[in-house]
Image (cartoon, rainbow, N blue to C red; front, top):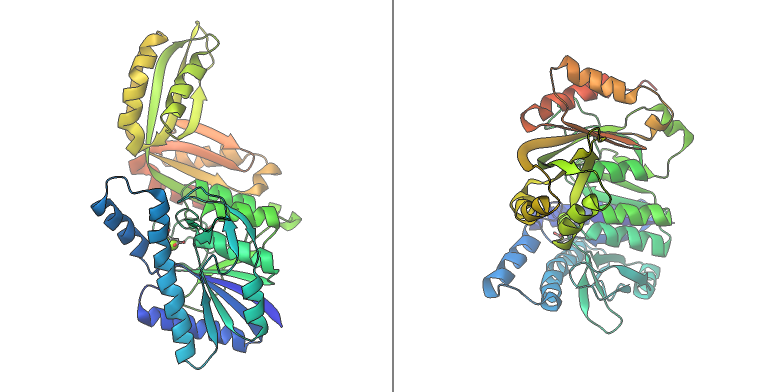
Amino acid sequence: MSLVVQKYGGTSVGTPERILNVARRIIATQEAGNRVVAVVSAMSGVTDNLIRMARDVSPLPAEREMDVLLATGEQTTIALTAMAINGLGKKAVSLTGAQAGIVTDGFHTKAKIANITPRQIRQYLKDDYIVIVAGFQGETTDGRITTLGRGGSDLTAIAIASAIGASLCQIFTDVDGVYTCDPRIVPNARKIPEISYDEMLEMASSGSKVMQSRSVEFAKKFGVVFEVRSSFNQNPGTIVKEENAGMENVVIRGVSVERNQAKVTIVQVPDRPGTAARIFTALADTGIIIDMIVQNVSVSGTTDISFTLSKDELPKVEQVLQPVAKEISALDLIAQDGIAKLSVVGIGMRSHSGVAARLFEALSAGGINIQMISTSEIKIAVILDEKMVDKAAGLAHDAFGLSIAPTA
Ligand code: ASP
Ligand code: MG
Protein backbone atom coordinates (compact mmCIF):
# COMPACT_ATOMS: atom_id res chain seq x y z
CA MET A 1 0.00 0.00 0.00
CA SER A 2 1.45 3.40 -0.85
CA LEU A 3 1.24 6.56 1.12
CA VAL A 4 -0.13 9.60 -0.69
CA VAL A 5 -0.20 13.23 0.45
CA GLN A 6 -2.63 15.49 -1.41
CA LYS A 7 -3.04 19.23 -0.95
CA TYR A 8 -6.20 21.05 -1.99
CA GLY A 9 -6.00 24.84 -2.34
CA GLY A 10 -8.61 27.47 -1.51
CA THR A 11 -10.53 27.38 -4.81
CA SER A 12 -10.64 23.58 -4.75
CA VAL A 13 -12.48 23.74 -1.40
CA GLY A 14 -14.20 27.07 -2.09
CA THR A 15 -17.83 25.90 -1.62
CA PRO A 16 -19.60 22.98 0.12
CA GLU A 17 -20.10 21.32 -3.29
CA ARG A 18 -16.40 21.63 -4.03
CA ILE A 19 -15.55 20.16 -0.64
CA LEU A 20 -17.76 17.21 -1.56
CA ASN A 21 -15.91 16.93 -4.87
CA VAL A 22 -12.61 16.88 -2.97
CA ALA A 23 -14.01 14.28 -0.55
CA ARG A 24 -14.89 12.02 -3.48
CA ARG A 25 -11.43 12.42 -5.01
CA ILE A 26 -9.77 11.56 -1.70
CA ILE A 27 -11.98 8.48 -1.32
CA ALA A 28 -11.17 7.39 -4.89
CA THR A 29 -7.47 7.68 -4.06
CA GLN A 30 -7.94 5.50 -1.00
CA GLU A 31 -10.01 2.98 -2.95
CA ALA A 32 -7.21 2.72 -5.51
CA GLY A 33 -5.22 1.11 -2.69
CA ASN A 34 -3.52 4.01 -0.91
CA ARG A 35 -3.34 5.49 2.54
CA VAL A 36 -4.19 9.19 2.18
CA VAL A 37 -3.28 12.34 4.07
CA ALA A 38 -5.01 15.43 2.66
CA VAL A 39 -3.83 18.93 3.54
CA VAL A 40 -6.43 21.63 2.92
CA SER A 41 -6.35 25.43 2.69
CA ALA A 42 -8.97 27.86 3.90
CA MET A 43 -11.94 28.22 1.53
CA SER A 44 -11.03 30.87 -1.07
CA GLY A 45 -11.40 34.43 0.19
CA VAL A 46 -11.62 33.39 3.84
CA THR A 47 -8.06 34.31 4.84
CA ASP A 48 -8.35 37.70 3.10
CA ASN A 49 -11.62 38.29 4.88
CA LEU A 50 -10.16 37.48 8.28
CA ILE A 51 -7.29 39.90 7.63
CA ARG A 52 -9.80 42.60 6.68
CA MET A 53 -11.82 42.02 9.85
CA ALA A 54 -8.68 42.21 11.97
CA ARG A 55 -7.87 45.62 10.46
CA ASP A 56 -11.45 46.72 11.08
CA VAL A 57 -11.08 46.18 14.82
CA SER A 58 -7.49 47.35 15.20
CA PRO A 59 -5.03 49.35 13.08
CA LEU A 60 -2.14 47.15 14.19
CA PRO A 61 -3.38 43.76 15.37
CA ALA A 62 -0.97 41.80 17.56
CA GLU A 63 0.68 39.11 15.45
CA ARG A 64 0.03 36.45 18.05
CA GLU A 65 -3.71 37.12 17.79
CA MET A 66 -3.47 37.36 14.00
CA ASP A 67 -2.26 33.77 13.93
CA VAL A 68 -5.03 32.59 16.25
CA LEU A 69 -7.48 34.24 13.87
CA LEU A 70 -5.99 33.10 10.55
CA ALA A 71 -5.64 29.49 11.70
CA THR A 72 -9.44 29.30 11.96
CA GLY A 73 -9.77 29.41 8.16
CA GLU A 74 -8.08 26.05 7.66
CA GLN A 75 -9.75 24.66 10.77
CA THR A 76 -13.14 25.21 9.16
CA THR A 77 -12.08 23.35 6.05
CA ILE A 78 -10.59 20.30 7.81
CA ALA A 79 -13.79 19.76 9.80
CA LEU A 80 -16.04 20.16 6.74
CA THR A 81 -13.85 17.86 4.63
CA ALA A 82 -13.77 15.16 7.31
CA MET A 83 -17.56 15.46 7.69
CA ALA A 84 -18.06 15.20 3.94
CA ILE A 85 -15.97 12.02 3.81
CA ASN A 86 -17.81 10.57 6.79
CA GLY A 87 -21.11 11.43 5.10
CA LEU A 88 -19.98 9.41 2.08
CA GLY A 89 -19.48 6.44 4.38
CA LYS A 90 -15.71 6.47 4.94
CA LYS A 91 -13.56 6.96 8.03
CA ALA A 92 -11.88 10.36 8.20
CA VAL A 93 -10.44 12.49 10.97
CA SER A 94 -9.33 16.12 11.03
CA LEU A 95 -6.10 17.33 12.66
CA THR A 96 -4.97 20.90 13.30
CA GLY A 97 -1.34 21.75 12.55
CA ALA A 98 -0.45 21.27 16.20
CA GLN A 99 -2.23 17.90 16.39
CA ALA A 100 -0.41 16.84 13.23
CA GLY A 101 2.84 17.51 15.10
CA ILE A 102 4.00 20.57 13.17
CA VAL A 103 6.35 22.50 15.45
CA THR A 104 7.48 25.95 14.31
CA ASP A 105 9.66 28.80 15.48
CA GLY A 106 7.99 31.82 17.10
CA PHE A 107 7.90 34.22 14.13
CA HIS A 108 4.17 34.88 14.07
CA THR A 109 2.49 35.16 10.62
CA LYS A 110 5.63 33.84 8.88
CA ALA A 111 6.84 31.00 11.07
CA LYS A 112 9.29 28.38 9.84
CA ILE A 113 8.76 24.69 10.48
CA ALA A 114 11.32 23.47 13.03
CA ASN A 115 10.32 19.80 13.05
CA ILE A 116 7.39 17.45 12.60
CA THR A 117 6.34 14.61 14.88
CA PRO A 118 3.54 12.96 12.90
CA ARG A 119 2.61 10.51 15.67
CA GLN A 120 -1.15 11.06 15.38
CA ILE A 121 -1.07 10.97 11.59
CA ARG A 122 0.70 7.59 11.66
CA GLN A 123 -1.66 6.15 14.25
CA TYR A 124 -4.82 7.18 12.37
CA LEU A 125 -3.46 5.91 9.06
CA LYS A 126 -2.72 2.58 10.69
CA ASP A 127 -6.34 2.46 11.86
CA ASP A 128 -7.47 3.02 8.23
CA TYR A 129 -8.54 6.61 8.60
CA ILE A 130 -8.20 9.22 5.91
CA VAL A 131 -6.34 12.03 7.69
CA ILE A 132 -7.25 15.65 6.92
CA VAL A 133 -4.63 18.15 8.08
CA ALA A 134 -4.98 21.93 8.35
CA GLY A 135 -2.49 23.64 6.06
CA PHE A 136 -0.63 26.87 6.81
CA GLN A 137 -0.41 26.41 10.60
CA GLY A 138 1.71 25.00 13.38
CA GLU A 139 2.51 25.48 17.02
CA THR A 140 5.56 26.72 18.94
CA THR A 141 7.15 24.50 21.59
CA ASP A 142 5.44 26.68 24.21
CA GLY A 143 2.03 26.12 22.67
CA ARG A 144 1.37 29.28 20.64
CA ILE A 145 -0.51 28.92 17.35
CA THR A 146 1.52 30.12 14.36
CA THR A 147 0.99 30.45 10.60
CA LEU A 148 3.54 29.87 7.84
CA GLY A 149 3.06 32.89 5.57
CA ARG A 150 0.55 33.38 2.74
CA GLY A 151 0.17 30.31 0.57
CA GLY A 152 1.67 28.24 3.39
CA SER A 153 -0.53 25.17 2.91
CA ASP A 154 1.81 24.10 0.11
CA LEU A 155 4.61 24.02 2.65
CA THR A 156 2.54 21.95 5.07
CA ALA A 157 1.91 19.35 2.37
CA ILE A 158 5.52 19.12 1.23
CA ALA A 159 6.80 18.97 4.81
CA ILE A 160 4.35 16.24 5.81
CA ALA A 161 5.14 14.24 2.67
CA SER A 162 8.79 14.42 3.66
CA ALA A 163 8.16 13.57 7.33
CA ILE A 164 6.03 10.49 6.68
CA GLY A 165 7.99 9.35 3.63
CA ALA A 166 5.04 9.56 1.23
CA SER A 167 5.55 7.94 -2.15
CA LEU A 168 3.50 10.64 -3.89
CA CYS A 169 2.76 14.29 -3.11
CA GLN A 170 0.09 15.98 -5.20
CA ILE A 171 -0.66 19.70 -5.06
CA PHE A 172 -4.19 20.20 -6.36
CA THR A 173 -5.04 23.67 -7.56
CA ASP A 174 -7.28 25.44 -10.09
CA VAL A 175 -4.83 25.18 -12.99
CA ASP A 176 -3.71 22.07 -14.85
CA GLY A 177 -0.05 22.46 -13.91
CA VAL A 178 2.86 24.73 -14.71
CA TYR A 179 2.65 26.20 -18.21
CA THR A 180 5.32 27.35 -20.65
CA CYS A 181 3.71 30.77 -20.23
CA ASP A 182 0.51 32.12 -18.73
CA PRO A 183 -2.17 30.92 -21.22
CA ARG A 184 -4.03 34.22 -20.76
CA ILE A 185 -0.99 35.93 -22.31
CA VAL A 186 0.11 33.26 -24.79
CA PRO A 187 -2.91 31.19 -25.85
CA ASN A 188 -0.83 28.35 -27.30
CA ALA A 189 1.17 27.89 -24.08
CA ARG A 190 1.55 24.23 -23.13
CA LYS A 191 1.58 22.32 -19.91
CA ILE A 192 5.13 21.38 -18.87
CA PRO A 193 5.30 17.65 -18.06
CA GLU A 194 8.45 17.89 -15.90
CA ILE A 195 10.33 20.81 -14.41
CA SER A 196 13.34 20.99 -12.08
CA TYR A 197 13.14 22.63 -8.66
CA ASP A 198 15.48 25.43 -9.77
CA GLU A 199 13.43 26.23 -12.86
CA MET A 200 10.24 26.20 -10.80
CA LEU A 201 11.84 28.63 -8.33
CA GLU A 202 12.99 30.95 -11.10
CA MET A 203 9.55 30.85 -12.74
CA ALA A 204 7.91 31.67 -9.41
CA SER A 205 10.26 34.54 -8.63
CA SER A 206 9.65 35.83 -12.15
CA GLY A 207 5.92 36.11 -11.75
CA SER A 208 4.45 32.63 -12.35
CA LYS A 209 2.92 32.21 -8.93
CA VAL A 210 1.65 28.65 -9.05
CA MET A 211 3.15 27.78 -5.70
CA GLN A 212 4.67 29.35 -2.63
CA SER A 213 8.44 29.61 -3.26
CA ARG A 214 9.37 28.52 0.24
CA SER A 215 7.65 25.20 -0.25
CA VAL A 216 9.57 24.56 -3.48
CA GLU A 217 12.81 25.37 -1.65
CA PHE A 218 11.82 22.95 1.10
CA ALA A 219 11.00 20.23 -1.47
CA LYS A 220 14.38 20.76 -3.12
CA LYS A 221 16.22 20.57 0.18
CA PHE A 222 14.54 17.34 1.23
CA GLY A 223 14.17 15.81 -2.22
CA VAL A 224 10.35 15.68 -2.20
CA VAL A 225 9.07 15.01 -5.72
CA PHE A 226 5.63 16.52 -6.20
CA GLU A 227 3.00 17.02 -8.86
CA VAL A 228 0.99 20.20 -9.47
CA ARG A 229 -2.41 19.41 -11.01
CA SER A 230 -6.03 20.44 -11.16
CA SER A 231 -8.73 19.28 -8.76
CA PHE A 232 -11.37 19.99 -11.43
CA ASN A 233 -10.39 17.30 -13.94
CA GLN A 234 -8.35 14.10 -14.18
CA ASN A 235 -5.52 15.47 -16.37
CA PRO A 236 -1.98 14.64 -15.33
CA GLY A 237 -0.13 17.72 -14.10
CA THR A 238 3.47 18.90 -13.90
CA ILE A 239 6.06 16.87 -11.98
CA VAL A 240 8.56 18.98 -10.04
CA LYS A 241 11.80 17.19 -9.20
CA GLU A 242 15.59 17.24 -9.18
CA GLU A 243 16.99 17.85 -12.64
CA ASN A 244 18.28 14.98 -14.74
CA ALA A 245 20.46 14.88 -17.84
CA GLY A 246 17.51 14.70 -20.25
CA MET A 247 16.05 17.93 -18.96
CA GLU A 248 18.94 19.94 -20.40
CA ASN A 249 17.92 19.02 -23.94
CA VAL A 250 15.16 21.61 -23.76
CA VAL A 251 16.76 25.04 -24.10
CA ILE A 252 14.03 27.04 -22.39
CA ARG A 253 11.39 25.53 -20.11
CA GLY A 254 9.18 28.58 -19.90
CA VAL A 255 8.61 32.29 -20.26
CA SER A 256 7.28 34.34 -17.40
CA VAL A 257 6.00 37.85 -17.11
CA GLU A 258 5.90 40.21 -14.18
CA ARG A 259 3.95 43.44 -14.50
CA ASN A 260 3.74 46.44 -12.20
CA GLN A 261 7.46 47.05 -12.15
CA ALA A 262 9.25 50.36 -11.86
CA LYS A 263 12.75 51.51 -12.72
CA VAL A 264 14.88 54.05 -10.89
CA THR A 265 18.06 55.54 -12.34
CA ILE A 266 20.52 57.63 -10.38
CA VAL A 267 22.34 59.65 -12.98
CA GLN A 268 26.07 60.47 -12.87
CA VAL A 269 26.99 58.92 -9.58
CA PRO A 270 30.63 59.76 -8.73
CA ASP A 271 32.65 56.60 -9.33
CA ARG A 272 34.23 56.00 -5.93
CA PRO A 273 33.98 53.34 -3.20
CA GLY A 274 30.92 53.54 -0.98
CA THR A 275 28.34 55.22 -3.22
CA ALA A 276 26.49 52.03 -4.13
CA ALA A 277 26.63 50.95 -0.51
CA ARG A 278 25.15 54.29 0.56
CA ILE A 279 22.24 54.00 -1.92
CA PHE A 280 21.33 50.41 -1.21
CA THR A 281 21.77 50.63 2.54
CA ALA A 282 19.26 53.47 2.57
CA LEU A 283 16.82 51.26 0.65
CA ALA A 284 17.50 48.21 2.80
CA ASP A 285 16.89 50.19 5.99
CA THR A 286 13.34 50.90 4.84
CA GLY A 287 12.73 47.23 3.93
CA ILE A 288 12.27 47.93 0.21
CA ILE A 289 12.93 44.89 -1.97
CA ILE A 290 15.04 45.54 -5.05
CA ASP A 291 15.10 43.27 -8.07
CA MET A 292 17.52 43.96 -10.93
CA ILE A 293 20.54 46.23 -10.42
CA VAL A 294 22.61 47.57 -13.30
CA GLN A 295 25.62 49.88 -13.10
CA ASN A 296 27.23 51.28 -16.23
CA VAL A 297 30.95 51.11 -16.76
CA SER A 298 32.31 54.54 -15.89
CA VAL A 299 34.22 56.34 -18.62
CA SER A 300 34.49 59.86 -17.26
CA GLY A 301 34.51 59.41 -13.50
CA THR A 302 30.76 58.97 -13.09
CA THR A 303 28.38 56.11 -13.64
CA ASP A 304 24.60 55.59 -13.82
CA ILE A 305 23.04 53.11 -11.41
CA SER A 306 19.62 51.69 -12.22
CA PHE A 307 17.47 49.22 -10.39
CA THR A 308 13.95 47.83 -10.62
CA LEU A 309 11.36 47.16 -7.97
CA SER A 310 7.64 46.77 -7.53
CA LYS A 311 5.70 49.84 -8.67
CA ASP A 312 3.96 50.10 -5.28
CA GLU A 313 7.28 50.92 -3.61
CA LEU A 314 8.09 53.80 -5.93
CA PRO A 315 6.81 56.74 -3.82
CA LYS A 316 8.72 55.44 -0.81
CA VAL A 317 11.91 55.05 -2.84
CA GLU A 318 11.83 58.58 -4.20
CA GLN A 319 11.36 59.90 -0.69
CA VAL A 320 14.27 57.87 0.66
CA LEU A 321 16.69 58.42 -2.23
CA GLN A 322 16.29 62.11 -3.11
CA PRO A 323 18.41 63.22 -0.12
CA VAL A 324 20.91 60.38 -0.70
CA ALA A 325 21.38 61.39 -4.35
CA LYS A 326 22.13 64.92 -3.23
CA GLU A 327 24.50 63.75 -0.51
CA ILE A 328 26.62 61.69 -2.93
CA SER A 329 26.51 64.51 -5.54
CA ALA A 330 24.66 62.54 -8.20
CA LEU A 331 23.22 64.63 -11.02
CA ASP A 332 19.64 63.39 -11.00
CA LEU A 333 17.17 60.72 -9.92
CA ILE A 334 14.76 59.45 -12.55
CA ALA A 335 11.87 57.18 -11.63
CA GLN A 336 9.69 55.49 -14.21
CA ASP A 337 6.85 52.99 -14.00
CA GLY A 338 4.87 51.34 -16.78
CA ILE A 339 7.51 48.69 -17.30
CA ALA A 340 7.41 44.90 -17.03
CA LYS A 341 9.89 42.08 -16.72
CA LEU A 342 10.01 39.17 -19.13
CA SER A 343 12.13 36.15 -18.21
CA VAL A 344 13.06 33.04 -20.11
CA VAL A 345 14.00 30.20 -17.79
CA GLY A 346 15.66 26.85 -18.41
CA ILE A 347 18.55 24.74 -17.17
CA GLY A 348 19.22 24.00 -20.85
CA MET A 349 20.86 27.41 -21.27
CA ARG A 350 23.84 26.10 -19.30
CA SER A 351 24.75 23.83 -22.21
CA HIS A 352 23.30 25.66 -25.23
CA SER A 353 24.90 28.75 -26.70
CA GLY A 354 23.14 31.66 -28.37
CA VAL A 355 20.14 31.75 -26.03
CA ALA A 356 20.41 35.48 -25.32
CA ALA A 357 20.93 36.19 -29.02
CA ARG A 358 17.82 34.22 -29.91
CA LEU A 359 15.71 36.13 -27.37
CA PHE A 360 17.03 39.55 -28.42
CA GLU A 361 16.55 38.68 -32.09
CA ALA A 362 12.92 37.74 -31.49
CA LEU A 363 12.24 40.97 -29.60
CA SER A 364 13.99 43.03 -32.27
CA ALA A 365 11.91 41.41 -35.01
CA GLY A 366 8.84 42.63 -33.12
CA GLY A 367 10.26 46.16 -32.83
CA ILE A 368 10.47 45.84 -29.04
CA ASN A 369 13.08 47.87 -27.20
CA ILE A 370 15.00 46.31 -24.31
CA GLN A 371 15.57 48.72 -21.43
CA MET A 372 17.58 46.51 -19.07
CA ILE A 373 19.03 43.00 -19.14
CA SER A 374 20.02 40.66 -16.35
CA THR A 375 21.02 37.03 -16.33
CA SER A 376 21.51 34.13 -13.97
CA GLU A 377 22.82 30.68 -14.79
CA ILE A 378 19.35 29.53 -15.84
CA LYS A 379 17.49 32.78 -16.61
CA ILE A 380 17.64 35.75 -18.93
CA ALA A 381 15.41 38.62 -17.89
CA VAL A 382 14.68 41.83 -19.75
CA ILE A 383 12.82 44.98 -18.78
CA LEU A 384 10.39 46.24 -21.41
CA ASP A 385 7.60 48.74 -21.86
CA GLU A 386 4.62 47.17 -20.08
CA LYS A 387 2.43 47.69 -23.16
CA MET A 388 4.74 45.48 -25.22
CA VAL A 389 5.20 42.62 -22.78
CA ASP A 390 2.34 40.37 -23.98
CA LYS A 391 3.56 40.59 -27.55
CA ALA A 392 7.13 39.99 -26.35
CA ALA A 393 6.08 36.89 -24.42
CA GLY A 394 4.45 35.45 -27.55
CA LEU A 395 7.55 36.14 -29.64
CA ALA A 396 9.91 34.62 -27.07
CA HIS A 397 7.62 31.62 -26.67
CA ASP A 398 7.68 30.98 -30.42
CA ALA A 399 11.40 31.68 -30.79
CA PHE A 400 12.24 28.84 -28.39
CA GLY A 401 9.78 26.44 -29.99
CA LEU A 402 7.58 26.25 -26.91
CA SER A 403 4.36 26.37 -28.91
CA ILE A 404 5.22 23.22 -30.83
CA ALA A 405 4.10 19.86 -29.44
CA PRO A 406 7.16 17.83 -28.49
CA THR A 407 7.50 14.62 -30.50
CA ALA A 408 7.90 11.53 -28.38
N1 ASP B 1 -5.14 30.23 3.61
C1 ASP B 1 -3.78 30.68 3.51
C2 ASP B 1 -3.68 31.80 2.49
O1 ASP B 1 -4.66 32.18 1.89
C3 ASP B 1 -2.83 29.56 3.20
C4 ASP B 1 -3.02 28.90 1.83
O2 ASP B 1 -4.02 29.10 1.16
O3 ASP B 1 -2.14 28.15 1.43
O4 ASP B 1 -2.63 32.33 2.31
MG1 MG C 1 -4.09 29.65 -1.19
